[in-house]
Length: 616
Image: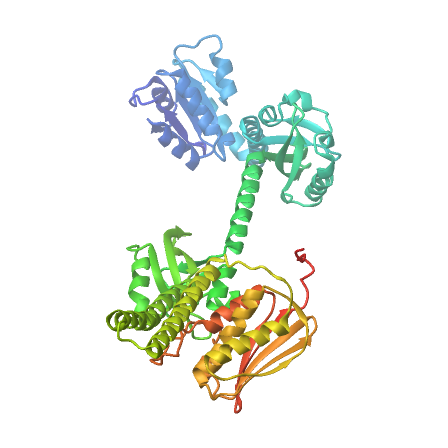
């Protein structure tokens, strides 16, 4: 009866005339010839119970390798493998058996031997297929286990991170060579050492929780970062996690994995510190800083200074379109910044939330953040500077305008005096001298006001406060200014002392009285009152003129007014100077107007402020 098993002959690349092929054919079988290793594996897979004859005439090492390859197949244990070699050495049979061969023949094998081997293989295939399957499974598991152990050992020994196996109580059973680099210790030194001896006492609870989590769960425990003691006594930061493999015979404990993250922690701390410093600078800069999405032409974030400039809350900034902030006339400059063609612009206008425009200087820098192009802009509010410059320019224009009149009068008077001195009467000389005196006085006041404006803006205005009686000063100034306009004021004065600079106090009164009569005419009734409103003395100058124009009331003390063509218009800075002088002496000034005229009231302290000592 013909056996049910096939015959596969591997000729190691030689032709079908190999002696082993002839012996198979003489036994009455037709072998399947495999001339290459891949073909041998394919045929062995198709017929797991086949008798495989390996011809080692060319290379015994190749035959042994082919034998191992067959045994590694899923059903490789079911095959009957015989190896033939013409050059058998003393250990060839042992090597062949170790490689998985069932028998080793010499090249002169005869047909009866082949037939007998095929019969035995057939009987084994028929009678014990189930046993073979069980044996195959068991052998496969053993091989897998052995392979897993080798793989685990290779990973364990060559891992760059610390890998250790610890018991349930935290005792270290084995550690890989990485502990030498990370902790400065040999692996054998740590065998039997408690994990808690290495962990910083403050971090021991974290490590215990991680170990308990690993023992209670089937997966990997959540990582924790703890400090571990280096052999030199220093502490390093370890990121540690574990997985319970108590049921795995390969491990038999908790597999601990730890990585030295000291550098990462240091870098992280440095980044946090750098971010903190940047945030402090960003939040506390006096200039506005804003991030702009270049593609969307909208704002991303801004610091408090920018929010103050535009009068918006921080939550209103995100997504705010540039077109909302900048007028259309400035769009070309904004486009140049967005396109990288310009980095600095002076005097752009930025729209406040209330609709007003602020003047700003803008500097930009383009960069890429998270793949998106963005613009960082530093915005400086120069509205006050522009107003100051405008005020200075206007002031110089006003002064130049006002100086022309007294200079022209003086020049004409001098010419008349020189040309008609011999024939001039005493009366004419007296009139001319009076004109000279008035115009020189006017020039003196113009120059004095100009100097005061410069000193106030430079913050160098000299003050010499002292305790003085205020009523006599008020009376003297009212009489002198009234005489100039050939009129007088009504006085209601309460006797009191004040802590003021007498000259500056007098200058404020002169400006107020001069304004009242100069702008309303000599027929205007002016009333001056002095009263005590502790801790201040209150002085008010009231006239029955038309009052202040409505459009001037809001910034009456804050701007220089362009004079009209009247020779009595002054240079428009009297109230501006009065406000600064009163402020510098510690008082306040305000104006109101009604149907019965205008009133300007200012206060000065009765005594020095607590932080200021009165000079002796």
